[in-house]
Length: 165
Image (cartoon, rainbow, N blue to C red; front, side, top):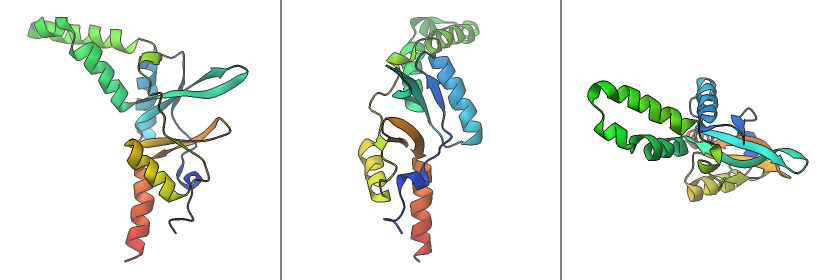
């Protein structure tokens, strides 16, 4: 069964995405909205233009990149360290607003794990283990077709394992 399934069998065609001109705040909003329907989703794809082509994959913003941006731009803010308890919420709100309204280019993951739709499950598993990410993009001829989440891979593999007992 393992070799009969392909990346296209696992991929989600309905994936979260933003335009490359979006701010980090917009990516966070899109990700939060996506998680209402798919709680295990932890990535927003960043799409843009390249010549006459549209919807070209430029990178991704994951929960990890958002947390890194918050750590770098908010939690290390000098004003937060010296703020009185009553001023902390205001200082945090100000620092968070400044952080999230920056452009995405400095907060994207450019090294996006890529799969072909015909890649068999062992190739999908190997990519997840090698890249140590909770997601991978399925693309063909430069067009994004969908996203595979590690939860979907686990569900499929564990279901096959349980059914062999």
